[in-house]
Length: 169
Image 1 (cartoon, rainbow, N blue to C red):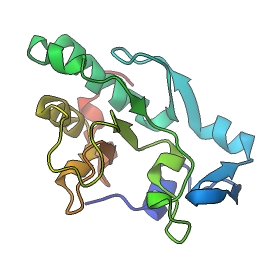
Image 2 (cartoon, one colour; image 1 turned 90 degrees about the vertical axis):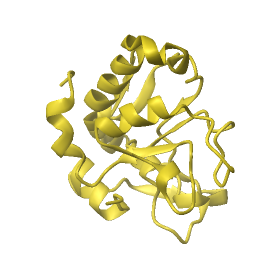
Image 3 (tube, rainbow, N blue to C red; image 1 turned 45 degrees about the horizontal axis):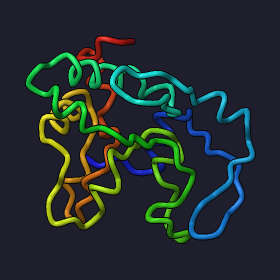
């Protein structure tokens, strides 16, 4: 089942939303540094070209997935596919201020190569091997939704049931 914003706040941020100010085009500016420092971490993850700033609770699953992608010779060419990995983006869903905050705001959703995998693209360019690995550790892929979002991954509602599959804790 798709994780909704309210449930995400409960699971990943102890029910605590950030204090923020609305900005143009559906973006927000978080002005609560203590909230960020409590729930976020900048971390190096094997296979990604730069550090990722994300929610601390998804780090073990991210590391496990990237370890599997990098180590599996079958997917080596696919591992090289990940050029852009974006996680934290403080904004509303679809940048619409009338919609709830995006899961990117809470650092739990991420996009892979957004320029190549645009919303409503006719087909994904992301290799299915990468999708399968991220799904195996508890992430849901936006490419399976009615409104396709091929770049997007986010935790499933039962994300923490996958903990026993994570090799990093």
